[in-house]
Length: 371
Image (cartoon, rainbow, N blue to C red; front, side, top):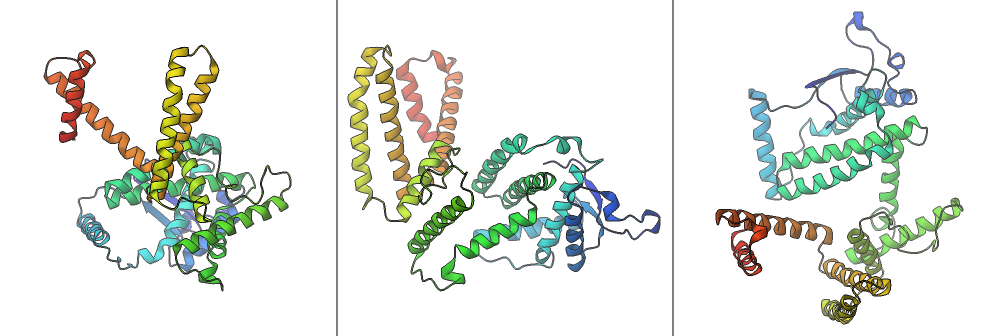
């Protein structure tokens, strides 16, 4: 995403050419990252990677090697669809080497003489890209295209590296902290694998998971008394308020269900849905009659509408459906059908907005058979 050149050359250690002999420390790729890159360079050398390297960004090559790569990816795609594990190649086994190269590359872009755009970025300016790349990963996942999927995952990985480098510049943490943190967390949250705890099924695993997270939050609160935490031991304490509302509702109800606070059957949630629908229906006429002159009816309608939506999220969660993904697909379906209606209306010689409501309904029903 950030690399426009076809070839990016970066030096990690002493080049083979004596005329270009350069010490890593003299490059000062990052004022606070030199020692980190020395470690990366050492790791690359241990993995058999030439420490004076030229990184070629893949292109749509028509060469024999490019065609072989296309056949390899096609075979991988077929293997993935048939649930067959892909045999690891020599290249795949050196994934750590590629990760080190990527960290060094991004550090170079941030360093003196690097990319002006990269050097201007901050954590705040990258927020939108982090969200954007996450949704692009989801789109790629839905596409079923393995090349698109791994490419978008790479863009998301770059965001993690970018933020880590920015944090290292500020003396806050490094990419090593990020990796070590998640490694320790996964070991700690899987005591049924790495410890003596028993878990007979995935439900027990999830229950243990939430309890461990609650204990972690409680310990964090003790270590940081100034941190805002109205209910330190709450299972729901770690759900960020900054999440989109649908995802927040999903996370709240999911975590509550993991400790046994859940409906006995889907029918109970359907009954709750009917209850919330009736409550909203009972107040809508009064709100309409008031013509929004009083703020109270509007606030009440908003509250009851929220309750109705919350139940809808609960239904999705109970059925094992991610409501955000389901709603995104419903949005796409509506968009495609509406655009089909617009096209059909144009073929009739009438702008869609000028069609009578009855004709709009006819076109909508017809679109269901077309899209």
